[in-house]
Image (tube, rainbow, N blue to C red; front, top):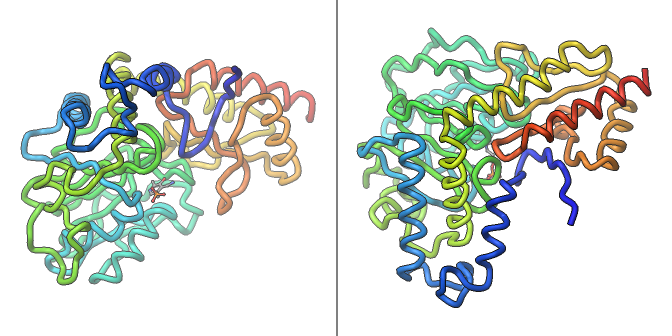
Length: 360
Ligand code: PMP
């Protein structure tokens, strides 16, 4: 067996230990004589899986009791609609547009009410996070929306926006559980699992209870109403059982690593190796303003499209895969989520140095 260093932005690398455990339990989960994939979502075994997963997530993020944890489906895209449908009581919301995913969420919200663009970094290809300390927040805004880590552009909010008392909603798909969070500062935190947490097909939403009501926009489907899922403890319909099981395993792995404080330290150390090299290299350079750099997604370029393509080709052959930048940016992007070992980044930097020497 040979595993590559997988720098995919998502679905992405998972901890090898977790994959091995899942493989060992594939045919017979804890003496049930069946795989978790074959199990009723109403069975005792699965109830234990989902309850343990929720308890571990609550412990990792210190989620207060007045927040619900929901395991949903439909991808992050479905949340682009569920958020306005459930939260737009005044039919007004303010969006901070720091990349393609925030822009898509903002555009989707326009279907349901007035979605204002409170700030944007589109003027410089989303290569920075704008100053959000004193934005023109709408007096009647139901919420202020951010995408906390911008997967494509490699930027991250280092301080949360001043929402002037309005509910903060954050898409944390690509920075989920990469560092501690102060959950109480948010009304809704949500993310797709397929980057830092598990396989694709699970979305986790952490929502303050007072925001979960029956007072949703007229016509909101039952399945798109948070209350439906909150009342049924994420078992209103058949959830992504196997996905939730895998997420649960990753939560346990994170606890074993020392929790989110330890993950933050690990991620900072890991990202620094790559950023330090990008800062000193005469060939490669990072595309993001240093103060806004993400710990998870690191885009970089040589400035020459042909050289970028040569690098990606040779890197792939050497076992460093999925380094091609998003089609809207070009160049390269290394996604270095929790499960990417430090050796993966060290080996990548060694390869980049060799490439730089050979192609100078
Ligand atoms: N938000 C962010 C920050 C993302 O990175 C992505 C996917 N790459 C999405 C939303 C969309 O996720 P999905 O494909 O699960 O709808």
